[in-house]
Image (cartoon, rainbow, N blue to C red):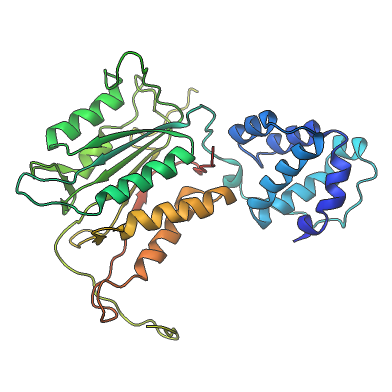
Length: 348
């Protein structure tokens, strides 16, 4: 990687005016506004420490961003005038798709709310063992990503519905001392039993997933209109069991005046497709949630957006085996979205 090989030379040169470089990479959308503010306010004793943080942030975003950064260093007139001694091998001009620069702006602190509804004990005496592990993992990773986490335990169908409506309309959900601030994004995690197209309350009464997402339709009154809303649902969608099929050529080594549609800016990721079961270990948690949390931890610092990360989750979960007999019990999550921009979550 050219940036890595030139890192020492770039570091010593850019220390002359690190604020200019920081402003340029923000102007060119190589970093988000929140990353820009964080880099401005980091507690470093010297200029070099600030430049190191910036270069490491760019490196973590992958080859495409690194090449774009090098291109800026070689072509921007202000940078060339300020750092005439900066001579690198001329990077090839790169054409970037418009979508790379179209990010949801996540500038608030906290970034937004993460609601976790964790249904463990049901009226028929059944228990979803292992769900506490999922709830803890989700709370940890979304706190790390800058969200304020709200946890609700064992809710009936009506209680779930009221909770969601209160969050959307802004009615009193927390104490007056804790003013509810929606921020720039909303994440809703529901861990429960389910059937085709629905999740179940602890009273075993179904709440349609479609009703949940439609509660958050854009309106002129809502603080979340035009902002990303992500729904992560760990629940069976039926009783059938997926079976695997062998892949050819693959071997196993070890077996403004603008308007937007009212249902825009929504992503729904369900642990499994309709009619099929979702697996959950009684102590280690569910395949879907544990894979999701692991992929977020690995890939958010690299600047990957949520849809790309969920592709990796699908691949990871799809490779898991629920039986000692390969292919006998499988699972594949389902993702659908109406997001209009790239949603990139970064560690706080």
